[in-house]
Length: 285
Image 1: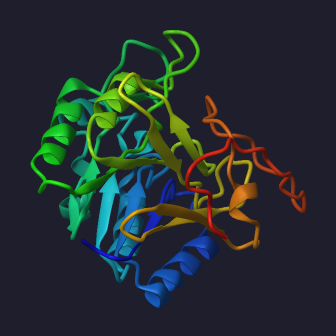
Image 2: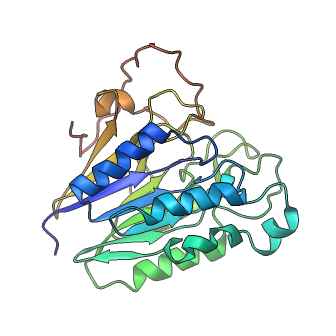
């Protein structure tokens, strides 16, 4: 079993509205720190345009670390419905080998869970949906791992259902969490809401830890651009939210998964301290 692993959890880069200062910083951190893996949990692009995917491919291929990529809702072509229905991941061609790639280490594996569908019976298609096929694929990969292997699941949308039937964040998210709780899952990584979080979600089969990363773009958010540095020492997973403004992990994290991404802070406005719920593994700053 691996004694120590470092994972960089990046999300919502949104090429087309990317923050180049943040991207250069993260690339330099990867080169300097040499994490064991980089997990990118979706929304690489703004509009799924070819030029945005080309920029994403150039940046991702330049990273000096093993990478796994989850698609996000912004990465499916909304404005060209035939592509969305018939080949929703077609524009990932330049780095298709990294999309939903399982990464395995001694005693630990990163396993993908696609939370996107081509169409939904609700107006807001940006929200998540765990299809039976996607969940079965994820669970079968987990069940095929060597006995005792701990698992980190990578997804784009937080597996949280909230509000009314029509406004649920991720349809079938509760069922997916319950199935994951029955397995050796350490945490579910996601993005989508542009702010970091680290929460425990109760299910009938036990609690599941949900970890969200912020954004590396200029899109809406309530905290500065950042990413998560995860460390696994063989018994405990800790999260450090890295950012260019030197704000603590505690103050970078929201204490609930919001319905939508938060508006940006005004220039110079400090990040207010955010209350957190108690949990077993506090963040390390």
